[in-house]
Image (cartoon, rainbow, N blue to C red; front, side, top):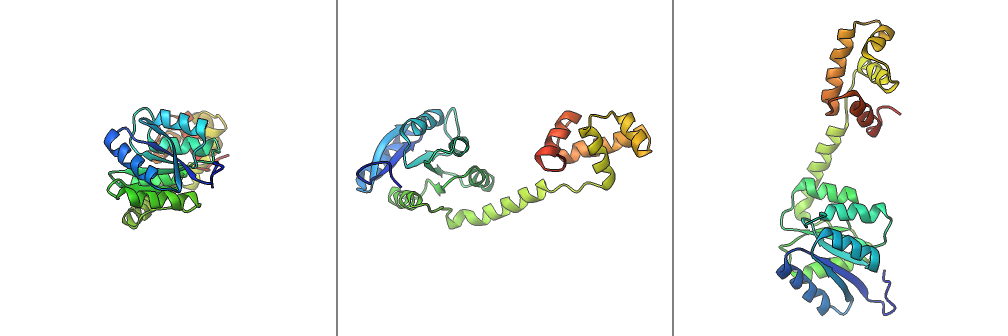
Length: 216
């Protein structure tokens, strides 16, 4: 993968810590396989540079001003840009790694790695590999299980009926009449639905139910 006639891998480096960014830049420049095409010190500038210069690989800090690394990954994949994004972090929290993987990151690496090892990962990513180090895989697996459990709602048949009424725009009394129960019973079901969905009103309940595929 390369947009360069010389066949070298075009790399963008973005980090708001100048000393660390310079260390990565020096390592990239020292490798004959790479061509450094730019630097950025915040996420919004990094995304602009990706859109303008189309690097083969962009290596970004997870936590940057104006736009975080995960948000940059989302934007790159949403816009179907060809740049592969590598995220670096001093902390390997499972939830952040999970969000990055969901967003479409190509690698999630520790800042504790030597710059040379990071460059080796950039080279692998340029070939289409996905790099998730062993030290984060157990935490990532747990985050996947936790998020999957949270996404699976167990609604009773009556709660499904009430939810269908909500989606149809019916009032609580109208739903009660249709289901042959009291309005108070419907309100109890609504309260439970709001709690399960993590929302506070009917519009949000319908929107969240559609997002989760509970209703169409």
